[in-house]
Structure formats: C-alpha cells, structure tokens
Length: 169
Image: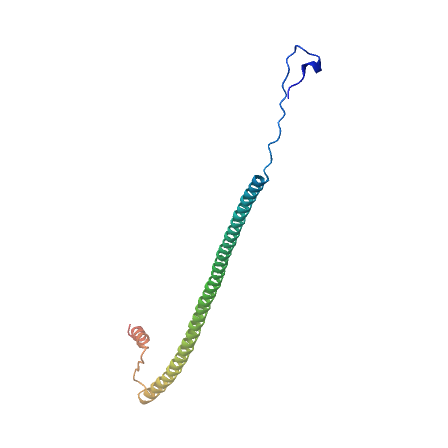
C-alpha cells in the first residue's frame, strides 16, 4: 500500500513505499508432515544414541572384566611367588638342618671311634703291663738259673751296649 501524499502535507516529496509482508498461507498438512519428519529424525537419533550407549556399556563391562581377570592373574602370580619364596626358605632351612645333623652324626661317629680307640689303647696298655710283668718274671727266673749270665731284654739293647762300653772302655 502506498502512502497518500496529500495526507502528509508533502505534495512534492517522494513517497516511500512500505511493504508489509503477509504470512504465507499455513498448510497444516505440510506442517504435520515436517513435524513428523523431525520427530522421526529425533527418534532415530535417540535410537542410535541408545545403541551407542549400550555398546559403550558392553565395552566398559568387557574392559572391567579384562582388567579383573588380569588383576586376578597378577594376584595369583604374586601369591605363587610368595609360596615359592617360602618353599625356598624351607628348603634352605632343611639343608641347614641336614648339615647340622651330618655334623652331629660325624661328631658322634668320631666320639664312637674315640671310645673304640680308647678301649684298644687300654687293652694295649694292659697287654703291655702283662708282658712287662712276664718279662720281669722271666728275667728273674733267668738270673736265678744263671746269676753270671748277661740277659738283654728287647728294648734294653742300647743300655746294655753303653754299659758294656763303659766297663770295657
């Protein structure tokens, strides 16, 4: 609509045209269709988001399970190391005990041998005393039988040789 120049009092002035836009006629069918398409897109996007969310949760659960299995394996390995360490310490203790038992056994064996050797030495001493007494008796009998005979007993050879050298010398 054009402005009336006479109404404004500017008869010679240029008239400015004012354009008023009238809204296009509204088609309810097109609006409904557009709304349904937007709703369908929104539902599809929401469905895809839910699917992605489900997949993310499954992946998260899977990751948690993998971490849990890995941690359990780590703990089992750690426990096995502790058990093996205890076994090694036990084996070391058993070895030390075996060495002590061996030393004690050897000491007892040495003590037994010492006792046996002591018994043998005592027997030799008794036998030597008996033979010494027998030798003295034999010497006494020999001197009685022949007082002028020089009887040299075993072990007295050096003494007899020295005595003969002193008398003859």
